[in-house]
Image 1 (cartoon, rainbow, N blue to C red):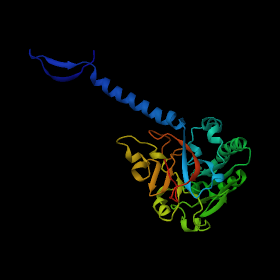
Image 2: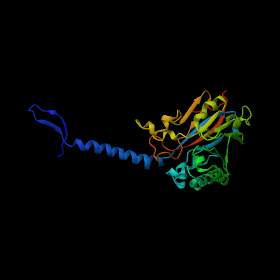
Image 3: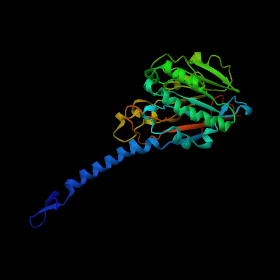
Image 4: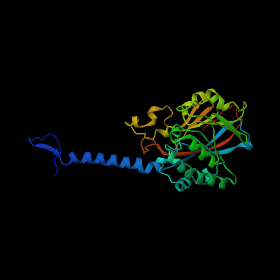
Length: 302
């Protein structure tokens, strides 16, 4: 039997020991650490969560109500989901969305651009089949996309039929979609992006980095969709230095509000820095945009 911890002496003066604890506790701690690492590396990155929200949007006409699928931070080189698995996890309800909005960080290297196409093409095809018509897709660049090469990615988006919004806006069936460049690489000219939108018209802003939200809310943007933070990616007590949460006030993801202006920050699909997730499952989000009959001109999140 192994030698345990000494805890003093008994009444007869003999040494009192707890057998085996010298090896049991370290072994248990190593086992727990290995299980946690295995979960974070091989299990949680595959546990895609599809969230859905109904969002009343000021100025939206009843005939312009639409479902929008928001996907962010693919980081295809780190992605644990194959195109077939992604389609299966999305399910018919998400694929029935008529708009696809992508908020950047598609890949990290030029060699991964074909993988971006291979992932998105089946999604767009499945959405078109569900909708019975071509799906309209829009995107903005993330900070990692500039490392991969914007010319190559721009060509890939063109082949997919995805419109990339670089400080610009387009109108889609009574709803405007605007998009800004990522501020870590280029100037995000918010004013330029929203300039074509008439006062009172409903619109959604796509931005990779959620740090734009105070400016967007002040500029009257009703609903902003962003990513970048991965929901913290590693959300565990004592490991904040490994987590994006500790470096960004929007790190946890989800809803943020400023009056009747709202922003949703997606946890995204892939990973960066370390190929692990813990306490921050990958996510795609469906927004059912419906008219808001109240006085607010912005979005009214749940």
